[in-house]
Image (cartoon, rainbow over all chains, first blue to last red; front, top):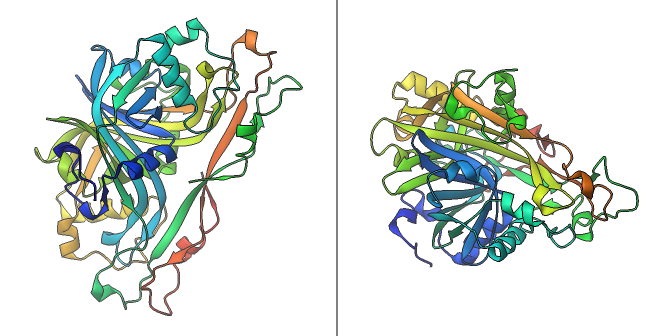
Length: 217
Length: 217
């Protein structure tokens, strides 16, 4: 079993659900769509949803909101959390009610990417994180790039927590009159909605068209 | 149009998507299932997913993880963020790619609830937040209650951000060869999975049974 990279990403509670295996942690990151990014500011902590992408060693964050996080300089201590809820776990007693979920917590320093080539590479990774849409779009202009803020966070310190399966009730409740089970929650892509201002004759990219109606894990 | 309750929950970016109407903010809180709760700690910010519920004026948080947040005392400055992703917004150029989403950010002080009656009332609200399952379960024991940590956060300082609809591209890209549109993402309840250790003759509660296969907004 893999070990945690540092004390501050070592699970203290629910240690039976801790996962430090890099492949497992990456799978959760790949399944998520937004990260909740936390920073400490002078007037308290702030947590904002941001789009992201990853390589094996680096997480990239994107969003105008990053500006607020970087007001103090070019890098900032962050916690990046990605959570997928997979179902409601309904126990015989509320004390054991829970959710099935997959969650990854990354801690580290977010640094602004200034080099234009590195920025383009990171933006491609972020844009292609959910579905590959970079190559079928008009490439970003120099002005687009200048207006875009991209941060990188090393994937050195992270942990995952995964809960799956049945509720776990007290022995003495098992033959009681109360129900227990799981109500699974799934995510699916709906029907594609072409933009109202789309001109005639522009086909939906194959990568996008193929997702309509598909389940997202 | 409603105004923000304080400067620190006044949107600086994307102000056209800011919502300070209490009913709108509550609707987003009601649609979410987990909150991402951020606190500042001595070794950096931390963001953890937690179950929650609300009344009109108060947000309640629950989770063993709250322990870590309260190590320093009985209350702590938090940021509680709830986000629902409603779709991928695919523009003609990556610079305008986005997501459709609903998000609420609550800032304030989380305080531990110690009074047993207040704690039970808060736990019922948290447990019934997604589906009403409190009344059909075995009530919590005194020992359950003692082991459970519940926090309350006043819903005084909050803001919502909602994006919906088409991508917004540059005028000069509108008649180009690149596609634009939205790929909606939906959430649905799956088929109910009774616990493997459920005894014969215990019916699925009506509130739970009625959700199987239903869309969750």
